[in-house]
Image (cartoon, rainbow, N blue to C red):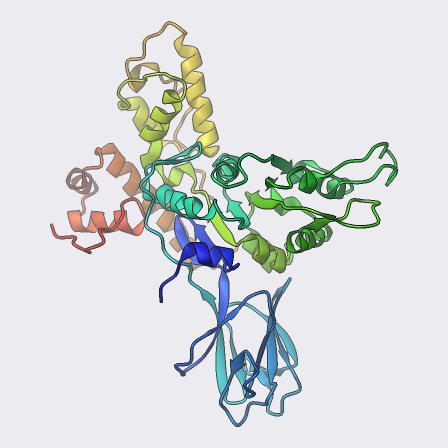
Length: 454
């Protein structure tokens, strides 16, 4: 099966790029053990039964003409029996109505149907080493750029996840600048800095006299950004009640100011960002499933700096180039220190360290390379990985081992000037094994030919 990403985005089928890899964001219903094509599950309710008018037709004498329906709800995927003769079954129990998650198998009569996530198309990494003000030569960043280059010219909503300091607002600004809305407003709303009582006014506006202190009319962010892009930062902090009103605004492209009698039409693209794990919040019923589904038409996660340490020389060079400064060779002991640091503040912290280095070098100081002028007194090796105790012991240990493995391989490879032979010798591994670790963790792109000969 072939995919055209632009078509998928414009028709509302979602895709995700998390940790530099594509992941499923939309769903399908597949009859188990049969060759009939799967049926896509989107915003519309899907009817299942033996009658030819059903969306998913099942040829089974035990299946009723209109047997059941499946739909996406705020809590998950709802499966509802429509009074069938032989019942709808989930995990060995006959159900009337049940909310399930992707990966579940439901039995209708004697036929099983699996609800699966649709894998998004895999894009080759971009040939560019930047997108807007974001920079990086690593495979993870170039894969991210490839998705954003394709998605930005569309009006698809984009959900950006990432730790503090990874550049979520830079990503949102770059998406706006690369779109047909670039000449129109780019409006930023920090959802974490507004009280619950005022968030409706900030987003949707209010009329004069709508509440105490409303001494004049306010347009609201959706109206101010109409024709352009609204960036909702720290979206995970929105209360559930506001999430419902935000969903209505996204679906209808209308907003109703507080105290107004009728809604206002808007034309606003939304890019949302959060440092929180929205999928876990959905599972905990702290974030609406339908809003997550609506926002994550394009879903990207910005990698932490510690996961792309091979980008450090490029980031340093880019930072100073934008200042019109020639830093000289980027190597030496101080670069090694940068590679050993965990960077809990990510690219923002690196930028501050480089700004400090410039300030302390003096206006008339001639740069002679990183080893001479970069002050690393505030940069000490440390680990910012946190053990995830919400996972079973085996899974938590595997995740920790993966983090160690990726950081070790990345650091050894960088310390040996990206020379596989020298890095493998240092690590006490064969060249083939070390190269496979580079491929596994996305530090190097696997050749399309699959030719890994020594």
